[in-house]
Length: 433
Image 1: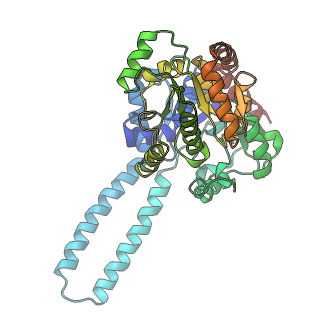
Image 2 (image 1 turned 45 degrees about the vertical axis):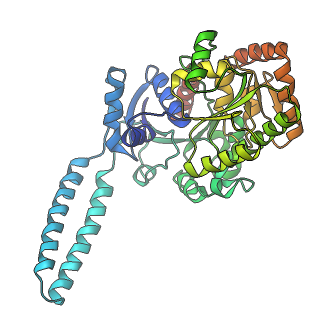
Image 3 (image 1 turned 180 degrees about the vertical axis):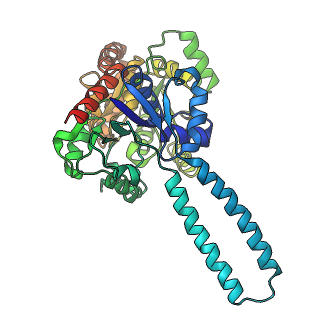
């Protein structure tokens, strides 16, 4: 079988950010690529951002040199752009020289309008990718399937999309999280009823049967994993200490959370709980470290909350961290806290368990699938339960050790080799259906 794997997310990222500051979605799409191409015949496409794919492949070097790329027919498009620019310059010069606005100018405007629509048509046509010889097109990102691929009809050609969650449709989420609902609907509408879907958890599959007009027999599950070269138990205390020093975290023990500051991540509640603990427990010496990118406006709100709770010097916002800092920071934590209200999978708790960090996490949506019985699962809205669990694990080193070992064992259930093998089997089922 010949699979066309879309790397639009990787292409866009390398065009916009030069491949720096990798995030969760980027990591999983790349990891799946890394483990898929030794198993099956794979070709790469970038339907949404083809100008960045060559940059991505160049950075990867020989790792991807043997893979074919299906690039758009862009020469005609680029030639037309150049011609369009030259015509526009000439048109602007004629307007400058014209002393009257009449039939002549109106004709020029109509000509410009025709050129513009022709330009859009050529842009659309030239962005197509040849699908000859392809058995299956896989869109693993949050991008839609292009119209020409959706409408492409050939016996033996199939389409599959990875669906990560349905959070934009959840009415209990904040307005900022639901604002993507219309765009997400467009993504889902690019699926045909005969297409297939891969979900990243059993929870998402259950939701997919409700939201999608697709035969449940064509909805599959392939669960993510964490890269063991990045996330592993770090027992080098000097490295943990130097990482804390580098980030300005001081010598005090700390609880850790790696998350964005989206409202559904429930970070406001976590900060408030921590503030209440510090006020009531005078001998509580632990700090709270929050890792992840934060928009400036949200960061100002979070900093204001930290000040209101009297937690300046007790709560640290590190921002984005490089890969080499993650393992020592996870491994050195008293515990990892993850009070999220909704997740499609829940990668940070898995990363934490793989690093040997004890985990206290939400018992909602897909998170229990990841955690199993390896951590402490709590209602993310029950502040008293979270306060009690944080205080208990801070004082109980035996509990920390037990949860650490349980987490390491549980994390072994999730590997990228297994995920890639699941994808390979799913592809085969779709093609043979």
